[in-house]
Structure formats: C-alpha cells, structure tokens
Image (tube, rainbow over all chains, first blue to last red; front, side, top):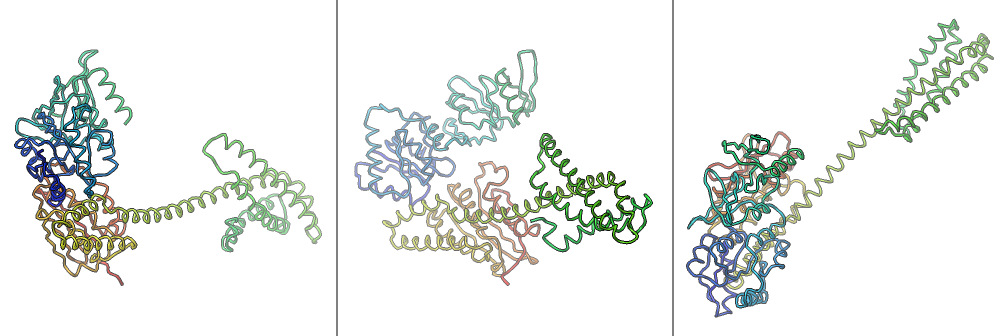
Length: 251
Length: 354
C-alpha cells in the first residue's frame, strides 16, 4: 500500500512517518510540504492512501483533494489537522476519518484500519466530494476561493476577482481578470457555496458578482440586460430581476 | 429623595426662584390699589408656602413618566389638571386664611375683603404656577435620567473593557496550542532534548500570557518578552521557514502600552505571512524612540497571489481601538502592504511607570 504524507510542517510529517513505521506494509512514497508538491507526487506515485493536513499555504487540504478528484483519482484520505474540532465533527457523517493533532498511537492505528477497510471494500458508501467536505468544515461560511485545473496548471481564483459565472453543460465558465476558466461543476452546486449577498443568480445560466453590476437595462417588455463595469451585457431573467430587486429593496 | 432637598444650595436656589413670583404677585396687588404693606404681607408668606407645597409635583411627575404616545399624554393631562385645580384651590384657601390672620395686625384690616374679591384671580394664578412647576419637575427628571444614563454608559464601557481583556486572555489561539503540542509529540521520539526545551518554552509562554492578562497597562519590554517566547515556539514548528529580525532600542522598552497589544500582531504575521508561504520568510519586529514617541513595526512577507483584505480583520481592529482608546489622537495605527511586505506600525507617546 502506497501512502503520501502531506503537511507543511516537518515535525508534523515526522509524527505520521513514525507511526507508519509500525506498519511495514504501508510504504511512504513521498512526503509533501505543500499542495502543489502533493499533486505532483500523486501523479507520479498513484498513492492508495494520503495523510492530508488541512491548513497549508497556497492550496489547502480540501483543494488538494478536489484537484485529485478532478483527475479521477480518489485515494483513501485521513485528514490530520489541528483544525477546529467542531468543524471536523461534520465529517463524522461522511466516510472519511480525521486525526486531531496531537493524536495517540491507538487513534492513528484505528484511522489507518478504517482507511484500509474503506479502500478494500466495494464502494458501497459513496465517497463524498471534496467540495462537500470543505463546505461542511466551513460550517455555513461562504466560499472564499475556487481552484481550477487548467491542463497542467492550477489556478486559484479569489472570489473578489471573479466577475461572473456561466453554465456550460456539466461545466461552469468562470470569468476572472479578462480570462475564461472552465471547471467541472454545476452552476447550482457552485451557487450554493457562494455568498448570496455578493453573488446573484441573474439567469438560469448566469451568476453575477454584484460588485461588477452598473445597471439593468430593459430592452423589450420581457427582456432585460445587466450592464457590467467593463461594458459586458449579460441576460437577466424575470426571476433574476426579482432577486436583484429583493436585494435592493432589502438594503 | 427629592432632588431639590438633597442640598441646601439647591433648595436655596429654588426658593430664590420664587422671589420674582412674589414680586409679580405684589405688583399685581399694587395695580389693584392694595397698599404696599397689604401686598407684601400676603405675597411673601403665600409664595413661601406655595414653594414648599409645590415640591410635591416632582413625586407626581415621577409617578407619571412621560411616554411617547399621545394617549398617555391625555391620561396624564387629566391627572395634572386635577392636581392643579386642587392645588390652586388649596393655595387660594391658604391666602384667605392668611388674610384672616393678618387682619389682626393694625393697618391690614381690609385684607380679608380684598382677598375675597381677588380669590378667582389667586386661584387661577395658583393653577398656572402649579402647572409651571409640573413642567419644571419633568425637566429635572429628564436631566436626572440623562445623568443616570451617562453614568450607566460609563459603567458599561468599563465592564466591556474588562470583559474584553478577559476574552483576550482566554484567546490563547487553540490552533497554535495544538500544533505546538503536535510538534512536541514528534520531538519526543526524534530529539528528546529539544522536546524538553519546547516544554519549557511553552510553559514560559503560557505563564507570561496568563500573567499579563491581569493588568491593564504593561511595559513594552514584557510584551516583547512574550512575543519572543511565542516566536521561539513557532520557530521549532516552522523550522527554516521562519527567520526573525529583531531590532529593539532599549530606550523603548519601559514604554507603557495596553496589555496584549503586540501579541495579535505577531500571531497575524505568522498566520497570514509565514504559514501562508511555502518557503516562509523573515518576520521583522522593531521598536525605536523618536521625539518622545515609540514606533513599533511588525513586518512579514505575504502571498502575492492573495488579494489584500478589505479593511482590518477583527483582531487588528481591536488592537487599533485599544491603542487609540488609551492614547487618543496622540497615537497612530497603520496597516498596509507594499511590494509583498505587510507592515503594521504603532506610534504612541513614550510614557513610563512613575
């Protein structure tokens, strides 16, 4: 069994390595100090199991998992974190185990055994998507950034740099700083994670960053356009206009 | 207790306030062809009794506080009217009784008859005076309430400050604590001597931060010692990723500042600076004295890909508020990023323990 240890702190990786040394059938294929290293190592070693810290520079643990999923890889995961225990409690509903730093040998062995069992068993319990886990851990707080895999490149889009989103079948097109990025996600699932006071579903196929909106023009009786700061026109549906109006009137 | 009876000065001022009314009354009587003696002999004692009698309005007004609705005003109005008529009657009755008594004095024999013809006017005056004293009482009550509210406000503010400090003390960052304990757990196997050192450092930090929370003001030296203890632990955790540049002018060390002001700045620099960068960086802390002011700077490199936050986070806002709360416009708080370096500057007057 091949494993990766992903944590930005040397000593934190050392603890996991030490505990793993008691399980000779688990081979530590690589240790990674950040998310990008982890993606590289995962491509190289195809691990069966990853020990994953959550708070890391550049890419956090959930984003690493999400990007692995996007490549069709889904190793067994044990989150290892000093993260808020209340946030982690949300994981108990999911088939994912976590270790709260610092942890005992017994606790570590139990997590390893659980991960092994999940790995060998038929996927009877569907593994939850990384975005779902991240949303659970955020405890209702809105998303702050989106990771997009664009060929070999990973782009992190901070939401105040996101202009609008368009639905394209199973994908969403993200418009940010003059570029278009494609991400495999439905518009509805993205919408549910965004801050509803900043991002408005103005149309069946569009979510708009309110900050970019200049005005809404009515062309014909049934057709309205949102005019953005850079002059872009996006269609506004009747329901979308209703949502905008509610926001204005509520303010 | 009636506010006018709480001090002699107040009571004196109130009674003096009746003097013009007595003069007015005398004037009216004179215009009705009363003699000086008749007018003054009635007006002076009558006003004195009225002054004492009308003190009672305050209790009535306190029992009938002014609401915001007009309906309440109607009900109150009826009560004031009734009380006013009663008091007006009582007053003119008093005048009548007084005139009977004064009639024994030679030269004032005509007084009962004069008062008899003036009774309606006297009653009317009594009613008006009573209503005026009602208005005065409400004014006093409002003022009293304002003072009370101010006192309560100040008390609450003090309480808020206390609880804020308590919260700060309890704000030992759990993420830091658990990560440190995890480092310790790793070191016990890898490097037991270092593990022991870490135990000592952690204890030192905890002891210092618990001790500091007890006080409102503290010397910069102690704040710096706490930061040092904290950073020594973080250095074990982050290893080569955390470098320190420390430049403290000893002249700045005795300067007094609000407790635990520096700690959130240093924690921020680690959290948003060093910990957010894969390769880490240098955290600089400097303190110097210039023209009677202490200048403290905390600098850290930051991830250029992360957009600068809009406004200050709650931690920094609290630091700013506490600094300005202590020193007012003699202090300055600046936070900003330039060329990938985030810098916080505190400037405050150099004040030391007497």
